[in-house]
Length: 284
Length: 288
Image 1 (cartoon, rainbow over the protein chains, first blue to last red):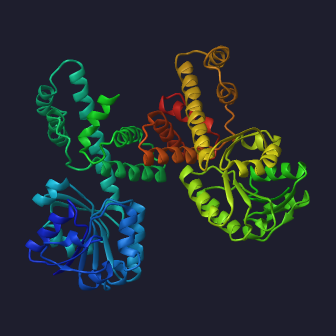
Image 2 (image 1 turned 90 degrees about the vertical axis):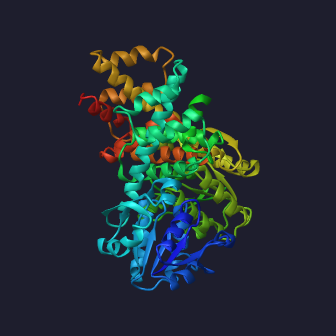
Image 3 (image 1 turned 60 degrees about the vertical axis):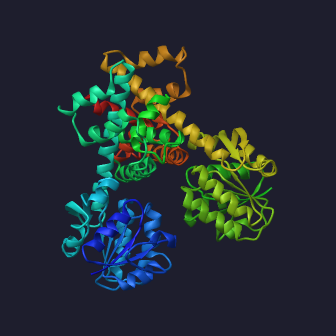
């Protein structure tokens, strides 16, 4: 199948290579052409040109505005993709923006899935991403074989936007858990107890979790190199809080964690791993 | 002075009337034509658009709902081709939005001031608003006689955006202040102590504040009529939290307070005064 890919960063590049390895004909576009260097792919001059050449297009880019620009802007995908083709947006963006883009594409007969992922760069490389999809179930079935080359757990959450809502929930739970681990590690050290031993002791009990395992270890090792850059979680928390506000739903813990992320940004840790929340506590 | 006025709602109408009382020649425009009538009756001239209301004026003032509305009407004002005009927005919007409008109008030769107010409808009618202004010295000097018709405590805080930064700071203090007084009331009652007596005792000490005095009394009276609607306070706290997010600024108290106001809007208390946060606290602790 002719598959387009836009967003060849830490996540997107390995994902594109998996699609190619599974036998798909890969087409790419990037804002900076050098990003496409060395990829086994046809390089296009615009998203519209890429869209015209592909049956399915994947995007994984940073902000709501960027996704909207690539999809609907001048030279955007909407101006090239044929009726019946599918856009699979794996970016993490606002649910209402995802719905708006889907609506505009639908007017041209182009289907869209919001399909944000969880699992980080490691998950992208290992093709073990969790994929949470919003959109028409039949469309998901059409592209499921492609998604299966990228991840293991593919869940149809609901209509357009539902995937982004699920991703927002994922970020709320995960980053709050990182903050909880950071506070526990910080307390252990302040009380004169070895954080590594505490982490080891907790791993077998009710507080055991993937976040404690991976992020707790980074905190013990004081290895704050990203992982996932904390600035992306900071961005995601802006989306979560906006969604909570739209629904009139109080999210006290999320709002509190968001302030720790603001402090993290102010302290200059935005390009480091989110385990740097420990360093925010140490700065107080 | 010849003054154009845009936006004749609960706040804008009495503010414009006070300008007429102060002897200024006032032209008005409002989205809903019927809201112009009380001003026309008082001697104002009606205009057909924001651009028309800006033609030939010394000063144009807007008092509208939100940043996109301000940007819209100010674009109209700029299109009038009145170079040297001073335009004042007295709505509450994000500092970043005010700075963007300032830059856009500067290109059209219009000097923009952000001058949000505090004091509510009562202050607008009495001409006793607190006015916090951001913009150039020259523009502030031009606008000052108009400000003096509408307000009492008028402070030129700094350059473009500084007025909105001050208003956001005001909403941090009042938002947390209302929540603090409501929590003290809930605390007293849950302990079986008369909350009215607690308020009375605190008024003489270091916890004295206007909010304890005025909002506290309304909490005792269970008078939840606005005043200042909680959905508007929520909107203003959202400006605070958005700005904190953009700057990388840790505001844990404001964040917690903003979530309480978010819950108020979500649970149908949005149209009540912000002191209705007391009801939310009471229902959370089984005191309802």
